[in-house]
Amino acid sequence: MNNNLYKYILGIADNSLILGQRLGELCGHGPSLETDIACTNISLDLFGQVRSYYQYAAKITGNGKSEDDIAMLRKEREYVNVLLVEQPNTDFAYTIGRQFLFDVYHLLFLNELQKSNDLMLSAIAVKSIKEVSYHQRFSSDWVKRLGDGTAESHQKMQDAIDGLWTYTDELFHQTDADKIIVSEGIGVDVTNLKETYYSKVSELLQEATLKTPESKWFQKGGKEGIHTEHLGYLLSDLQYMQRTYPNMEW
Image (cartoon, rainbow, N blue to C red; front, side, top):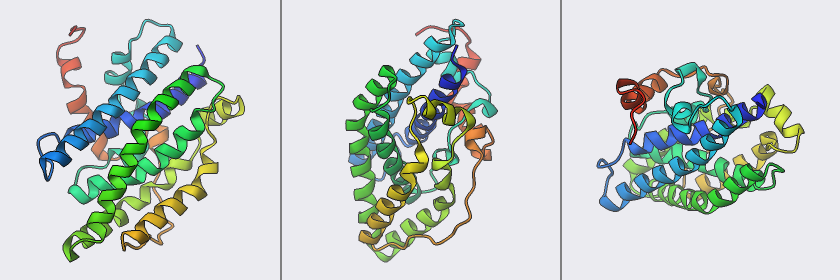
């Protein structure tokens, strides 16, 4: 088993799993039917990508684990998603802000991952780019609509960006496994994406009449399995069926 590759795949897939679960919580609770369906479809896109990653990860382990085992039966400290994606759906502005801040990164990341010399990861990236391009258009349009809308929507969107900003820098941190996989030509050196990311985000925020936060204080820990209190509650919902009825088959 290539343990570093396994860890690297989890680092990619866990982000989409947790964000997909967050969006899934909104099913039936969106501000309009169209938006509700759009958020649910984005959630399904992310879960589809996750399944491909976890199937590959399960194959690498060679220990009989399935994609479901990897997705559903790990403990909280074994998930390595960034803190940004586990933040709760405080209100619609927070949901959109979280989505936008991740989407910009996600698309930049996939554009580089498609160049990987690992054919499976490259294929997943190529397949996912079209979906994530739509995700970014959707979240960007809503940031602009809320930011340049009413006084109330503007303030809510600004508050969301200000509150979530502290989690953005972690997107560009590398674990030891990341560094090894990058050196092998498989992974993406995310440190090279940082400047472009903040430039694109700031440009869109300006278009939305929003201020780019100036805070240089950032939180991290998710990539090392150290999470906010929110992840435990999310996992209790996500894992309920698998843990209550173990070994069930659909």
